[in-house]
Length: 436
Image (spheres, helix red, strand yellow):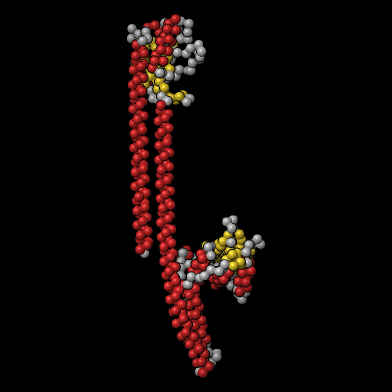
């Protein structure tokens, strides 16, 4: 009880440490992410401020009145060449991505394309920016992407002496620096995810290790307890068997001296003595840790022998299905015989006069032998299904309740496992898995 209490406490502490660690990690990453967003916001604000200043200063270098006389697309006009050179200087001096002039109807009036690359991309500033610029404001948009390039755009109106807007100056500045910030942002998220996975993995292995250590401690204590119980049980059994033998002998003498051989009273005492002896043997078998003796066993011969042992039950129908490719088993033949004998005996006792018991043996993919024993008895209710392997639990008046408990322990000693599937009124299937 103390070990279980300690384990519960250790489990709570472990979960508490994991929870605190996860909260601290998530908080640290959240703060880092928020700080990164502030840095991005700061750089965007600073870049917008610088871009608006460049746009305003550049607009002062352009005579808006002259633009009214420039025909869009006429690159031979001296005024066009003049403003193209002026825009080129502004672009080079300020490390701009692009700069050009649009008419109020969004036709390109002047751009910085040269004869080397005369083709220009379709000018398409954000419509909201254009509308605000046509209202006389200098405005800057949000980050935009074109192919693998990122940039910010500012649009400022070009106003002539008559306070008329004759054109729009569009200024674009590269913002590739934000790609690095985005990469850092993604890296931070990936790093956070990996940290969470790492913490959970470590916690999982710690939890399994603590549970395994506790289970080993409990197993060792149980083994020590069983050794003590076995020694005590052997002593008690010896002391009980002696008076039982005397009672049996005395019953025979009384029967010869005073009774009749037909009197069922004298047969009742030996029957009860036999039942007590069987109970003592089952108890000793359960209490003592059996020494496993490995030998090669032919499973088909063993099951056939067991089936013949129940041949007196003519009312039952046995059906054997044993795979031909079963190898010899390296296991304890006596222990395996006792396991299967207990299971088949339970199936026989559960079946009615027209009962049927199917025994099937085959190989599993994982190099294990699967033995299935199925009967068409009344089945086991869900209420008691979880207790059938408990020592001394039985639903029959004459049973000791140790048969399945002994079988389960022996199967575990042989490195196997046992499973029971049962549905009321539809029968029971017991599956035994054993390593080759």
